[in-house]
Figure 1 (cartoon, rainbow, N blue to C red):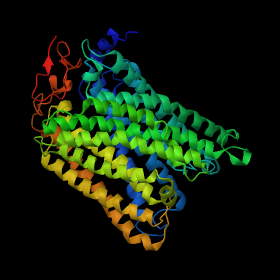
Figure 2 (figure 1 turned 90 degrees about the vertical axis):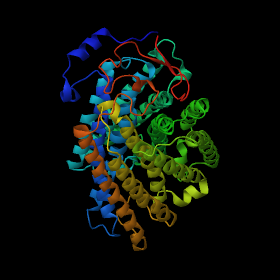
Figure 3 (figure 1 turned 120 degrees about the vertical axis):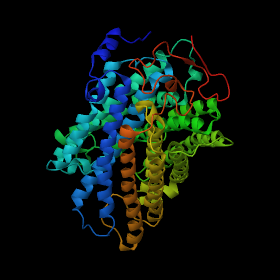
Figure 4 (figure 1 turned 30 degrees about the vertical axis):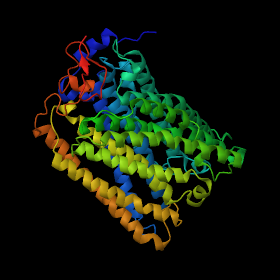
Length: 541
């Protein structure tokens, strides 16, 4: 089967609005769609961050005195859902994937440009629907996991809106995943082999496979849950003979791979950034490719380690403990590859590199606590405590969000032709890194000493540590200010970057900055060694 870009799509792109108006249009240009994903995701990040600040204000005191308990549950539900489905997943997949993948494979656009646009335009109404659900009577308050029977017995209107929003967001992910697989496999320029692709292509290929395999399971599960709520069926409702543990199996079959849907693209992005700013080839390319594929396979068989306290039989506990321990191996391989890439390099101390190194530190710490949680006795001790909250945030914020910021600093010149301020960037990193670790590192102690998560009230003995955590959250909120100032000042008055300010070798830097509508003026370059610094890399056909 051959896939090619419809010439009508190219003609349509040339007739679309120019300038800033194109970002509000149904654009077919993969670069415009990538920026739409990024800006839309960041707006929802600000909303999710505001909700996180409200949570930390509430937890600064042991009593429920900032907001009522049901409102706290609603805020907690919205915060988790927004940060996962409207910020991290759309940005690391949709934003950077759309912008970079066609460059990396030597294509003019994605395989299905119209489907690509539809995938993005499902997100704004889904997000607005989700936020609006907070304002209806009976807003969703069962958490981002929506476990029954809580999601069935609490007020129903908000929960149904929540389900509809997540279903639309899941559809967007599936459309994007199909598009990335087709683009990477079928649109590579002639002469470009799979094992010559930049690492982000492999990360997105693995991620897209996980999306296509696991997201439909979540969709079906939520549809059955909606039947229980609206039609009073008995799929998961124990009063009617339903099985709540079956819901957990189905939910986590998607939601643990969802962790890799968030972090695998981050693995690919950091693998693009480190070689450029250390002036060294990416260490162990082949082992990194196989480790990504290993994570994809193992990521589908570790879901029940979330359920060690759900009546899981001993044989199943043993299997999922072993599987979870095994998945640490390919992840560890990538860590050593990144460290070896840095070792002996000519490292540039800039914002992109600092956030990438911060990612490595945070993610390793989160990975160590993840291995601990895979052990049944320890997991039973800290299950549903703040130890799990700390671990999860070290993975998804300390890992993925740090790489989102690193990637913005790295590719900002590509998109705008302007350089960002390094002084403001380093200030942004310093406040973020200190605030993040001050917020979440103490939560390990809280969890080890038994403070439960997802509740607004707690034992007064935990107040001081919670206040430290809340100060860290305040610093994280403040860190957004220099970042936004940097973005606006750089767009308006930033220094011209030139076409390739980092002297990078990957294909996106071998055209003008910003790029033309069709990516290159002539034929796409053939880059056989995207990390071969000090060698002959590029040739034109």
